[in-house]
Length: 358
Image 1 (cartoon, rainbow, N blue to C red):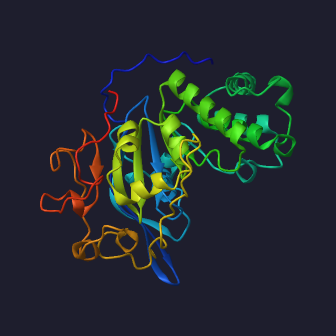
Image 2: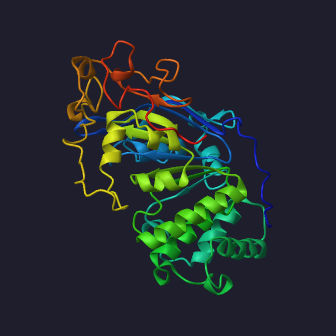
C-alpha cells in the first residue's frame, strides 16, 4: 500500500479548491453571530495557504464550513466551495462523510481531546483506513506502521498498542497527522496544529508537515495566529479580521510590504529577536468587533490610526494591482486608502520600499 511520491507540478495549476463568497452565521439567544461574511480563496495541489488573524477573526470557522463540521447553531448562509468541480455545500451528508478523512483531511489543534482515550493509537489510525479503503485488517495494520514511520514515531510497530495518554504532546500530534494522511488526502487542513506544543516540538511538527506535503504534492490550508509559522511554511497568506479577508498575497510580498493597517499592526507586534533594536512591542489598541452587530464599514476602522469618515460608513472592496499599480501581482487589500482618490499615507499606499526576491 506504499504510495509513490507524486510528480512535481508546473507553477500554474488548476485550483483544487475554490471558495466563493462564504458566509457563515451562528444563531444564538443573543441573535445572529456573523462569523464569516463573504470569504473567497483558492488553493492548488502542492501549495500551502496560510490563514492568519486574531482569535474570533473567522479563520477556523471558514475551514470548518468547508468541512461542514459546524456546531448545531451554525449555518452556511451563502457561498460555494468547489472541490474538483463539485460544490461541497450541495452534497448529502453521507457523500460528505466519504470525502472527510479520504480526499479532505484535518488536523485539530488539541490532539488529546481529538484522540479517543479508550482506543489504542494504532486502532484509531486503522479505523480511518478501514472506513475509506477496501483493504483487510492486515493491510490496514501494515499501512499504519508505514504511516508511523512517515511521521517519525520511534519503534512504530511496538507503539501500535499504546494509548494516547502514553504519548507526549508532540507524539500525539504525530498520531493525528498519521490519521490525517492515512488515506492520502488531496487537501489537508491544519487548524493551529502547534498551539499546545513547546517551541522545539513546534518546529519539528511544522517541518514534518512541510516535508510530507512536498513529498505527496498535497494542498495544505494552515490556520494560525502565529506570523512566524506563516513566514516559515506557507506560499500564500490570507489575513482575516471581522469575518473578512483584509489582505491576501504571496507570503514574501506580504511580509516585505504589508498594505493593510491591520496587517501592519500584526507585524509591529512581533518581537525583534535579532538584537538590532530595543524597541517596545506595539500592540494594536482596542478590541475586535462584536460579530452580533458588526460595523457597517471596515471592521478595523475603530482601531485604525488612518481611519477616515468613509471607513466607518461603507465596507471597502478588495483592491488589486489593477486598481493600484504599487501592489504586486496577486496581492489584494480591503482598505479605502487604496482607492484612486485616497490621500497619500506613507507605507500604506506608497510605492514599494523593499525589493522582493522573485
